[in-house]
Image (tube, rainbow, N blue to C red; front, side):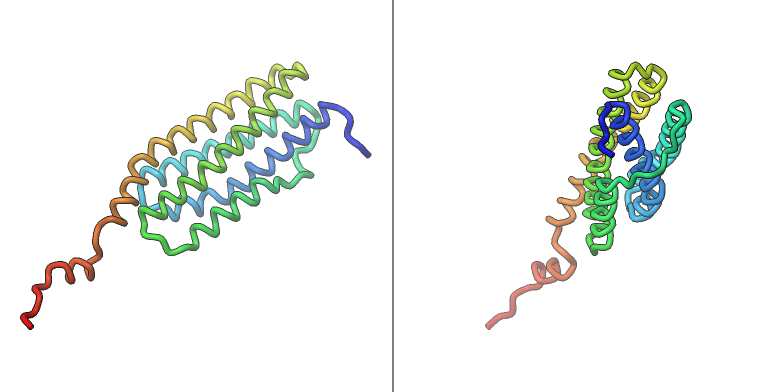
Length: 182
């Protein structure tokens, strides 16, 4: 049956978000565990706590709509999580891995910012006043999480680059070894 109304699209978007958030609740602990940088780990753990609250807000909206939150798989989030998991299986040095984790986390944040912005706009058009404030609260959390990742990336990305530029022990040995007389 073709969907014909903005309300149906809104509910579909909310279901997509709900599934995306529940996927993140399962993925974020693995991401946090892979972090070498303590501040990055704490930031991801904080976002996990926020994500649980975001799931609760979506459940409130579904209750108000008298709808079930299930029935939709968020393929976008599934792909982002899979891509991040593949990156974490690589054998990068710690600082480089942290830089990769930030990149994966920011892709997730940008996806969520776009999705919550869309849902909030639909709620505004549908005059769902209570939903607007719940969605806006989550949208602001996602934006702050992205800003925090930006701040962390300034230090972590620089450390990753510096680690690359530093000669390895083996290379230092070659540089300091005196040349033999011929």
